Image (cartoon, rainbow, N blue to C red; front, side, top):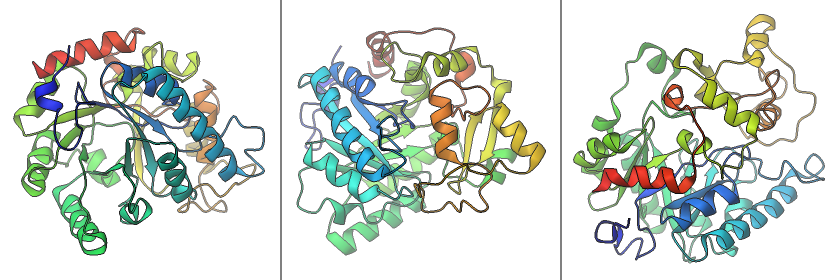
Length: 351
């Protein structure tokens, strides 16, 4: 089912048949296979650049080169699966130390779009100056959207091609204060989307964070959203690059398993309870065994644990040492489905 009338704009051309972005999830959760499968259905598949080279032999000796090499491979895998359909994007976190290198490599590989968050991506327009690629920030408020738009226009006379508005229900790193999340004193996603739409004018806005089904999509379209970004539901797909152990963790989880954490990145996040967090709560911290300087905001001398080690362990389904990011609706997921079946289900929200 295609929604050409809705998605064929001067921004996306005729590529984005279904305005669904599969959220970028690291480490290793959304790679080439998942992104390519989503694009093949007419959506936008997203590869997370975060520590993407963790399976390369020289990752701990030179993680930047390993990340670039792996990123190029995964983009090629995604393009081969997509076979010219949909769009392929990357999600690049501003706090990663190889942020610029990953963006440059992705552009050289012909990526369609760059989505960037985990901080304000103020340098993004300069990194892609003169290149044929769409760029989009992830924001959690109209204030942040307006600031980015002013900054980009002043420095490069560029504006976002589209904007992802992420609410409090998302998994992973969140653009809210920890107190707001714990006390539930944040604005609902519908209200944030409406605020951002007013600020952004004709820029397409994609709503993200806690979106589960077609009914959620319909509510957000009424608020002015152009489309949606969904992450956690794609973990429970056959084509997801995560290990079966990670998928099982998501399928078995109930809402009571969720917790708000303070990530070593410096941002709060939503994850599933794990032995790692029990250990950190009990002992104060789990000192890193080694450091590859992957996150600019992380101090290995004081960090409660190494987020790269924890996310890699999570990818492998390691219950003792892993960090398992998840959105607020994981308790509603009870089975593995195909990407096509999920995309068909979600597309009903645009009818």
